[in-house]
Image 1 (tube, helix red, strand yellow):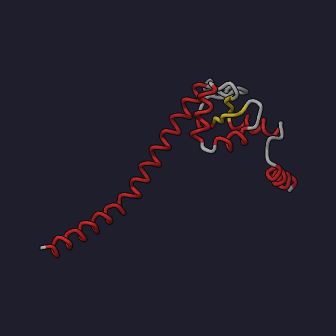
Image 2 (image 1 turned 180 degrees about the vertical axis):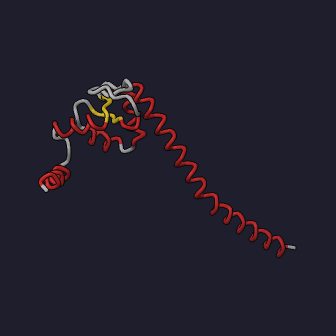
Image 3 (image 1 turned 60 degrees about the vertical axis):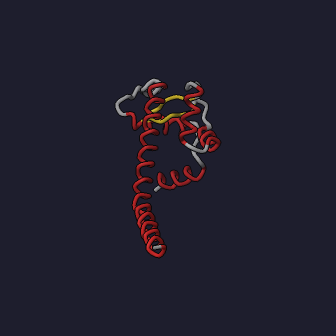
Length: 132
């Protein structure tokens, strides 16, 4: 009787491990999808909080083209300090958007170029491409 119970236990443990192996990737996919939806939802709320249109040109056609920009620069250091995009978004909500502005991708690139806010490596590569 004990031998049969041990055998059943081994079989049930093997089935459990197999089931666990199959569901682990599915669970990871579920978690990743949930986090992506939460990030998008929070981003859309921030865009609405910051006015829903580009401060410079007034663009408001597609929310995916918006970038949240620091008014005085220094966004890279801020993101490194906060480490995750979730913490970054929470900080913007907490500040009430006072230090931030909403720019479309074009206006943000123009601002970064005018203020020389890009990294030296990127500028060297850009100059090489332009000179060709």
